[in-house]
Length: 290
Ligand code: NAD
Ligand code: MG
Image 1 (cartoon, rainbow, N blue to C red):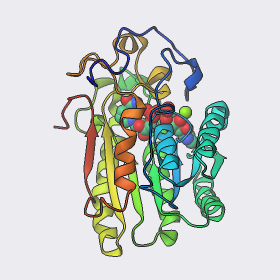
Image 2 (cartoon, helix red, strand yellow):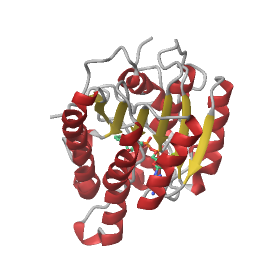
Image 3 (cartoon, rainbow, N blue to C red):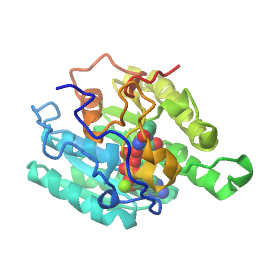
């Protein structure tokens, strides 16, 4: 397979939709590995909580985790129920248990109850994927409202803190925590002043927490994707003229499809990757992390 030709290339149609965006409204539809991902028991019997598991990168991770043998809780916003329903069906089709737990991660009490409900439903927790994210492109600081700044930090920085803090008493040696950062942590766009800062915080989350939890046998890593074809981008994460040529600037000349990053999430959760902690893993079609 030549990776350059394996997935759709720009130009893409303009396709604005309200945040948080739905997969069904995307053209072309993203590929989350629905027809391609093959498991080999790497996560047999494991119990995973994935935020933002309804769509995009989180959906691809959820499908892969289930096909590798894990039971999965997904969190998402209530308006994403249609996307979440598809993911629940895919997890169950893989023969695993799926639990859909909608709710707004800007709410600390919800984050804490999400963890408690996930632990109760799964019968424990050993993989935590902090993947939900909020991104709106805003050209000028003058137009960046305090509410938008607050939401970006609540979803991207506070929620992983609240969720991880609630999860810690349940995590045993061998557990794995993954956070989804971004190339924006290293090479911030002018219009993503607020978002890029949260993704830099996600890098520090992984590097610090890995030091704290290493002695407990719990691994913590970050994934830093480049441009991936997901509703986050088409629902205001990029201006529509950038959606038309999304991914064109990478050496691959196209965006990544969520299916292409799922193997990283599997590997970082799997027991055989036992010395990998405190690291940041890129997947960005050749764009650097410097
Ligand atoms: P996505 O839109 O499919 O997923 C983001 C999810 O975040 C949504 O599905 C939604 O369920 C969740 N979310 C947002 N606000 C929420 C809230 N208030 N409460 C609960 N859930 C909320 O898009 P994606 O691109 O797969 O995003 C997943 C992660 O990847 C994000 O952290 C994003 O920052 C990161 N990322 C994406 C790209 C990219 O190009 N797509 C690049 C780098 C990093
Ligand atoms: Mg979604």
